[in-house]
Length: 202
Image (tube, rainbow, N blue to C red; front, side, top):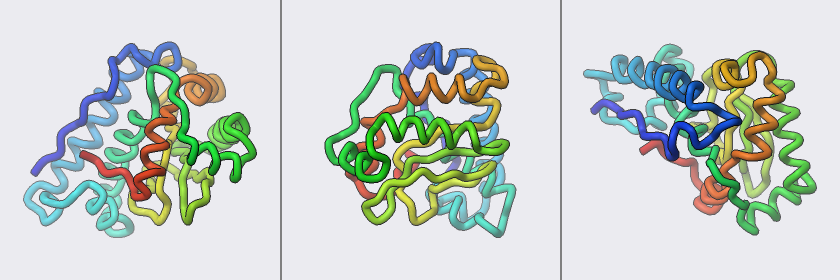
């Protein structure tokens, strides 16, 4: 069964000015759609056709790079859209306690997320993740993902250039500052922490 592109959880103008409707039209409407279309074509008529997206990512890691890239990017982008919100949300008390324990404060975590994103070489993803009750910032390169890892991802930042170039040109720090300070979906992160298992693509 082919996967469908999940609708954005907000209007295409809802993240402006951090992420514009024009950027979403390309990033969601073309980049994300293309990853999903290529994955659907690759799994048609195979045992993967009836598998979950997370199972496809895990099965293709190290065995089928093309399928891995497209399935992982399908998952990463869906998770990324949910990692942002139009209006400010607050982390749960449990998440705040874990943030304070790992980073000192929410503001310190935000600064570290921005610093890691700015320092990440070339394309990839910067994650807030939980493992064994402890929070950490993890980085993955290119299409790599935490979807099939032993981490529980809570939030992710996309640092591929197409995520921000139309709005911020080559100024990745400007994009990261706008998203981290104003658009992170702490309610989503809190839900992921409370659930205790990796978010699944629906």
